[in-house]
Length: 139
Image (cartoon, rainbow, N blue to C red; front, side, top):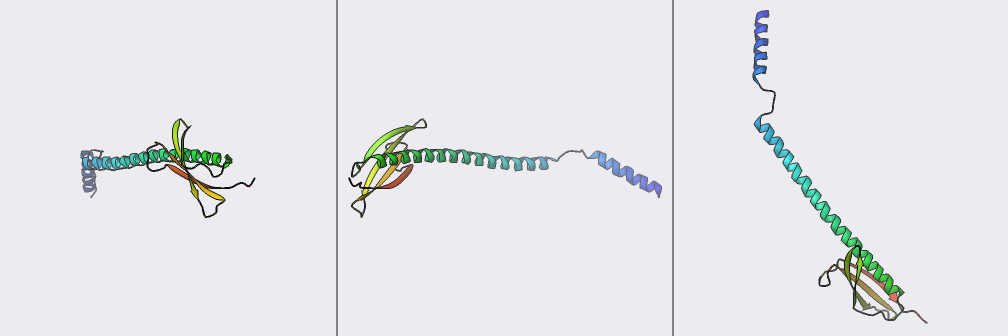
């Protein structure tokens, strides 16, 4: 009985020695596929994040330009404010193009002023747009 156990142990040890202690080709290829899919997903996320940061930066600066133009409208005491005035201003190393529209309201003593900001003067869509209301100042 001891003899048969020793033979079984020797056979098991011999079988273990025959197997190499590494990964099979299929295991390596599967691992590479998993890592490549994860890498592609990470690159896509990083690219999307960089694109969104640029867009948000543009929107933020355009909002600042619009806000500055609305302050200028509120400081101007002429009535009614000049309509369809266009201009450009430099902010953050860029040139921003603004367009002011004055819209009549139901109240004769009040006007709506819309400031639209564009990156190019020929752009159809505004990057940012702000609206305020100004009232006639009694002298």
